[in-house]
Amino acid sequence: MTMSGDKPFFRFHPGAYERGAFIESSKPCDVCAQRSVWLYAGVIYTIGQGPSVCARCIASGRLADHVDGHFSMHDADFEDDVSADLDAEVMQRTPGFATFNAFQWPVRRGKPFAYVGHGEEDSTWQNRDAAAAIRKLYADEYDEKLEGTTPYALVFKELDGRKHIAILDLD
Ligand SMILES: [Zn+2]
Image (cartoon, rainbow, N blue to C red; front, side):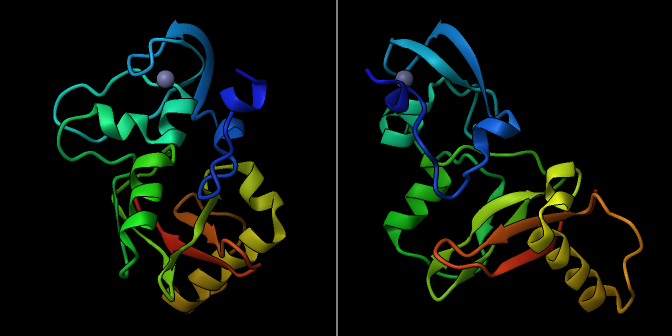
């Protein structure tokens, strides 16, 4: 197993490792029984306790085969229709992130956006496109200029483009 194999990239949540969605661990994964290396530290929304799962098994879909019945990595629904493949990739093969509330995952022309960051994170405000998207959200929603920062937003970007959008995540 190569290092990159142990640490797969998640295109709909590219900052997952930096954000702490995984911790380095030698604990065995409940799904593949191998050393986790990168053990998922987030929530799996399912009936009862979700398994301890490694990054490999999330990315490959082995987790989806392992869990009986419906589960999701996110407390979210898509705001618009997406294909079954993309639905499964985002909802079951992409690590989650902390939010205050359930949210509607942005979609344009059938393509889900990729998660960039939360208003609570300094890295979001250091990202000029992300900060601009939150300021635009506040201008549109509240018809006022946002002074300083706010924790109440989630930022996404087009998977293959530069467009960033923010949505409210009120506590
Ligand atoms: Zn595993």
